[in-house]
Length: 315
Ligand SMILES: Nc1ncnc2c1ncn2[C@@H]1O[C@H](COP(=O)(O)OP(=O)(O)OP(=O)(O)O)[C@@H](O)[C@H]1O
Ligand SMILES: [Mg+2]
Image (cartoon, rainbow, N blue to C red):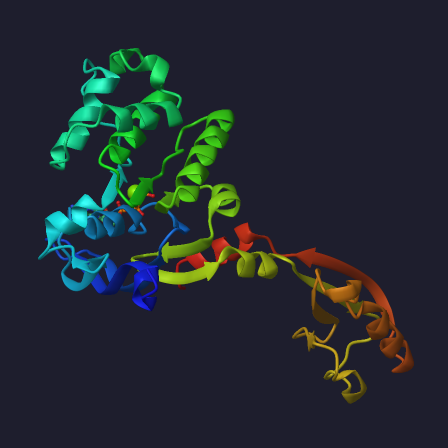
């Protein structure tokens, strides 16, 4: 554990996937996943999130590059790598008539782990499924079925859990329950990678956020750092008389002049230390420079906006 390499529970190096037929679904992905973190992968439909997860889990072979799970190559040492991973797939496919307890126990057996009813009980209790352990899946609600999938993924005590759109189509109350479950898992030491379309979910849950667009990882950043971007604000000052350029006396302010010269845009940090946004000084300097302001307005970029801009198709 003291080994620095140990912090990277998953290493993804130069990973690419081109499907038969020539479609390039993943392009040269490099990513380290840290032990014990929650990483949220955001991206529009078809961006490659499920493909990336499938390649990491060894269900789809990469065209180039490699994935190491705890140091094990996930193709050449598939069994060792796969044993460390639990996967909750995007699609719900279950045998409708099997009972909760049986399907979860069976999943453990698939990994060659010895029977351990105490572990199965712990998993079912943690997901509030204990009361339903003897129910057939067909008698469960959609949200409970999703939780059964999580229980199945946890049955063999994986140290890494992939959740592919765990809360798609799940109501707000249940989504909050699932977040709580995922947090508890993280607190118990499990590394979690989840995909989601809900920016709110990434904001709520993730330690880091990765954005995938058209098979490329266009951003991976600590959530806190992203939230600081979220705090960035812009003040637009509409001028009575257009300017040819930003006057030198105003050069210390972060100002840009709009193309038509009719407005100055001032970027500032809404969460600046000591509440000093610099606006008071800017207005005083404008007055001293004899620049009359006709109107002004402010706007704040949201995580949603950052995300939408990132995933926008390059023109
Ligand atoms: N077996 C396959 N053969 C050919 N193309 C595929 C195959 N599987 C996926 N693709 C394509 O790869 C791209 C990425 O698909 P993927 O399922 O990874 O997207 P996603 O980001 O998970 O989307 P969603 O948000 O809809 O779940 C899509 O264009 C898809 O059509
Ligand atoms: Mg998907």
